[in-house]
Length: 554
Image (cartoon, rainbow, N blue to C red):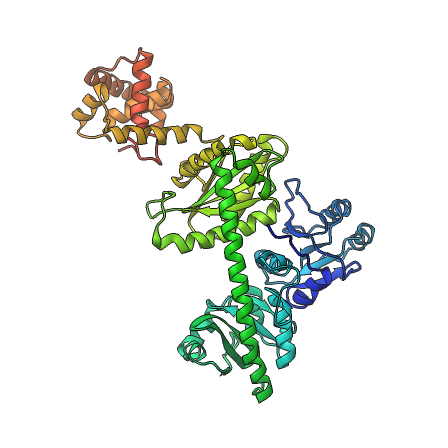
């Protein structure tokens, strides 16, 4: 695995300052190296690597800020980032001075996820497989923010570097001097849909991708009707493959020298993007191999976990998958969902690394597995994983229909069992049996067992027999009122009042129906084995997987 290079706090502010971040209180040590990006969890003890940049999501009260600064002082944090505006409180400023932790603010309109992604882009210079001395065009391989600033200086205009899907991968300084459309693009890390529509209708992308020279793009009206600054764009290509594009905000036509510089810059950007892609592919394959080896258990699991940095303490496994159209989540690969699963996996990896820097994840088939360290008690670790999982799905909004299963905490030697328990919990969560898309195996053992029994009995072709079969035959199906009466009585452990209430009938009516069910089926309700068999068949063979309670009253 490659040793990570760390950018400085000054570099972070050079790239993101004025657009996403602004210094608020405290002295900025520009040379101070940043050791990682962590999202603060107010309800849990957060592991902080040395010199971490801490994202204080939801921290706004003065007392909360002061308390957090005190904690960060002992952790040697590089800085604390909070949502603007900050409370105008002298006590907060004094706490900043005492802690030595500078306070920065996130621009209104920018998302925490976007900030975390941008910070990791800056901090991950060493993660593309390049040596410390490898450079492309005089700039460290993969350092797209440095490259964006270099291009901006050459063409004398703020620029963005975008991928094939018009997502911003890097931008130069000076974006605040452009227009609202550019600000929205940078803050959202994606060209807004309304601009995309106009550009597509004008044939801009067609012209851009069919030309090897820069293309002038006329002004696009903003939401308030005012014109945006025209752009000059050039495609970034490797042979016939379009990798992305460079967009410069240029009120005036570029002169010949600047146009030539922009065209030459596209070639250098292509090399960086190819280098990043190759490095990411290698890194992804290594990570997939290590996670896969670890989850299989056996003699090589400990070595794989050691390389992942997880060999010295208990671990637990998270299993994440998209749901199919029928609401289930399965590990089988579907060609139509492979790309979507990879995007979901990438987002999950980013979220995990923000919450727990030592976590690892990889997409295996259609399931993304996360390996998390589990310090403290098993219950504490599982609850922490549950919060991380729930927060991830909440942040997805409606973009993905996914479920997450949380396995048991195990020692390294039993990690294959952790994967199995996570898979079982994932299946339960994907069927909505818990009322949520996140399930801990500790909470859903019974549901998981029922689903597995159904698999076994279905494979053997088993059907209800004996008393239940006679009752179904008499009522002409499994939704008959007498069958539901029997089911309610069994669920209520023979409490007639409770069972009658569950069916919204009078207890005397319920007793009459129950007697009819006993007479017609021949079941002996005084026999424990007969009751158990009836309950098992009702739950395993006769009910939909998401519904174990009696069918609705007719």
